[in-house]
Image 1: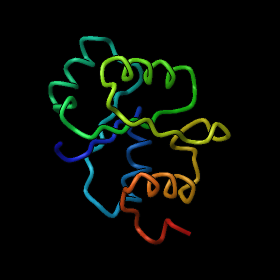
Image 2: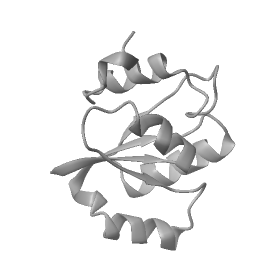
Image 3: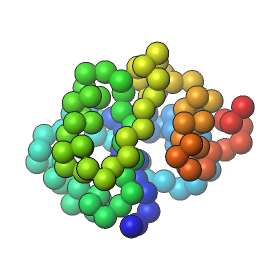
Image 4: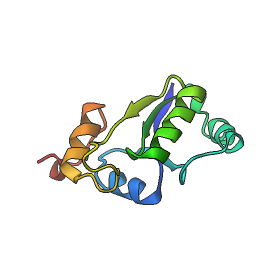
Length: 114
């Protein structure tokens, strides 16, 4: 498989994660739920059928709906979860999010691993 890719809902989530990473990683935003046509475009555009795909979305209704869409279309994707306490990826404290990402072998800058 090609380089891994992380799928998040919004640009704030992307920025929150990107600053912690000590590795290049392509992060794409869905900007909420996707129509089937747009999902198919993403799969084709990023060759998601042949990549290690990670999904990290908010713990809310739109996040659940998005996960279901990806489970259907990309059954090989790995779903990452933030704590239901924080509900949103962007609201998750950096050390907690960093530990979770490190647990999936993403390289994290040491300053975030306290």
